[in-house]
Image (cartoon, rainbow, N blue to C red):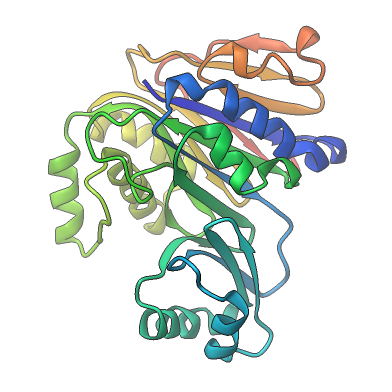
Length: 296
């Protein structure tokens, strides 16, 4: 019984308020997932720059770490237990290799031109406060509150899971064939950090998209290849998408106005959004991909 939220801005006003709305939505889902929480926000990127969201060891001096990396044109911004390292695109692999050598305990939480991803163990309201979610702006974001059922309560096991550039996934439900899918993906060279079934779904989706399959087609293929009960919300650099399994036993609701598109596991997470009283509100259909893209 986890909680999912998502918000896609259609105008600059919602972009400026995105973090504040997402924090309210995430907190509303706290009783569905008090174990841990996380979110991804798609912020303004810089040309030819990649953002690496890191979880360094406790008490790491970010400025000292930046100096040790010695990569011209890089910058680092601490936020809670995480930090966002911005590096020139051409130096991304150099930065990853240097981090692995200099501070091997550092966890790479996510990477991309626009995505910043934060997650921690603890109540969702506390996690949102720790990372100052309410102060963040962006074009879209997704969040998750977790009630662990199939794996341990750890920061690594919290959602979202990011296994591709500017790509992340959150999940409410349970996959019954995740062990078989994990074995297949491992034989293909993909690595896993946890035993979480959601990580399997994220890696599977990344593998499909690396082959050139568009997001909507990859999600339709998931209906055939991933067994179980699930609602997926996926974030990419240009938008977000929603998919429910063919039985759709997990609750879900969406709302759309001329200012935003919003998703939540329950309506109460949408209740404080501006203009919700006149929004088009509906339950997403089973086995149907819903997707929104920037500029469309």
